[in-house]
Image (tube, rainbow, N blue to C red):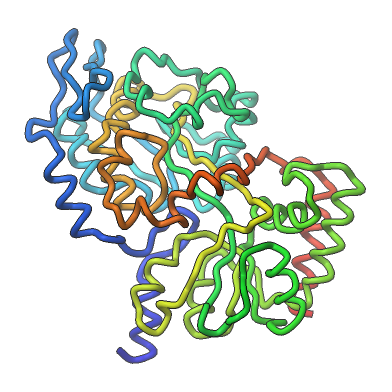
Length: 395
């Protein structure tokens, strides 16, 4: 494979936190799913309940309302398994499944604030949901119409983001951590302290950070021993001092192509997400790429499904919210996008290669070090530090 072909291979799909660049263990996963999926795959007639194809869980209940022929969604790119969309359309008679995309939570909210209407469901990250509810963009859920929520691990219910479970249907979860090239960085990389020292020292100019204030701030705050949600002005100043000290040693802030920088060795370290790792590992030239959840702890993010206010096709929306958490359907989601599911029954059907990958499903000892993030977009001191940091990147 030529260098040009290799880079094109790595770049074949746009990368964001939700863009999984290749399918880990696809054959094994597909075989497992085929063995577990019910051949009928349909709901019982309205007013009755059919057992879930999983083991003795809650029934998949047919909505008692007529389902519209359209469902319009607003989501991250490449974040729903195409086969699940087709199955949903066929089963429920939905003729049009609209799928518009956004690149960040800020873009999603800005579009809603700008007066966008017509969408039924969206997929914000959990810390933004409370603000969206306060602004009237999302509506409370009738959980009786989503019985498959019973499959969700209790860890992902009654969270600080949505303590009364009014708005959120968990989608996928993940972490922000350290990506690095092991054969080129022989030193141990296990912590934010390691990233700090290596970036400031031997690998100055060889570290990339994602262009995301919410994902970068946990680095200095956790390094200092603070909560990543700490907004004490003195503590934020300490965190800012670390970022400003490191800025001249940072190669770039890049959320979209950092996998290319790692592949061509422009960068050897990255503060980022798991997304590009599998594809880099699949290439013999970059199979040494590793992902680390820092020992001091890091950000735990949860992406969610929400029902938007004024949804024009509410019955189709509820059908989707329940359908997507049928264990076999949800397992296909994880196989497709490579991020961890909160659905415990679905997890049992996911290929071992994915379930045993700690970058996707953090083990229990790591989960204890993870911290939920809140929406800090209104904290001016954070915004000012972030602007200064970006202006000083690269010296």
